[in-house]
Length: 223
Ligand SMILES: [Zn+2]
Image (cartoon, rainbow, N blue to C red; front, top):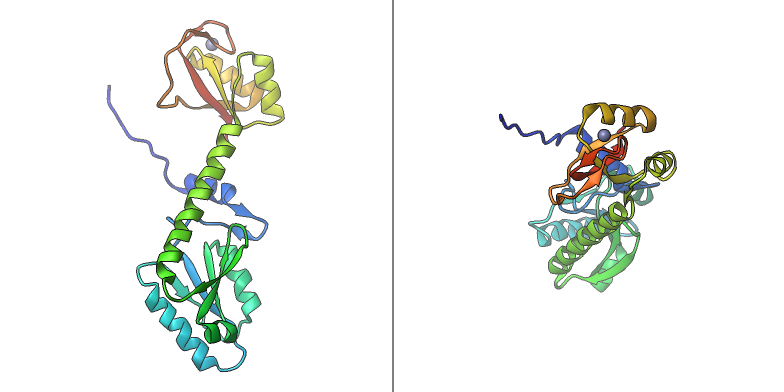
């Protein structure tokens, strides 16, 4: 047999990411792949120079992380909050007079909007830990979603019904005959997505024709 990789790791992956990792405010990027992990936004009330300097020092303090600082004066802080939320940046750091006086920053999470005031002291370590936590929580959330939306189905009636209602992934036996898959596609719009790497060999019956089948394949509708 010739072997060839087919990663399909292109626009589809990005489309899937956007569909899965977003809310009504826009994108929510996982920290590991976010081009900007932290955005620093000054809130100008009082001395701009002081606030700007404080922000620039923060970039220095957080070196090693992907940090962007938004010093545009023609945009309001509120406008910037929305702008960076849409882009999905995992963390926003707000700096105003209050933060400078108390030597702190206000950190806001993109995924759950939680706000926390943090001391400057060990800021980098705390931010790094928080980014890891956000990454892990996103992974667990979506893992749970995938598990909850993957069902083992053994009758074709149930298969069709789920494909018309809840959809998601269905694990069903298939005889590996292209004709069966074609008919299944015509009648339910679902096709095989893949044979999972950990699929064990079993004795089953094809969901469509009832003939012998060795594996449960993953079926779903594609877009
Ligand atoms: Zn079959």
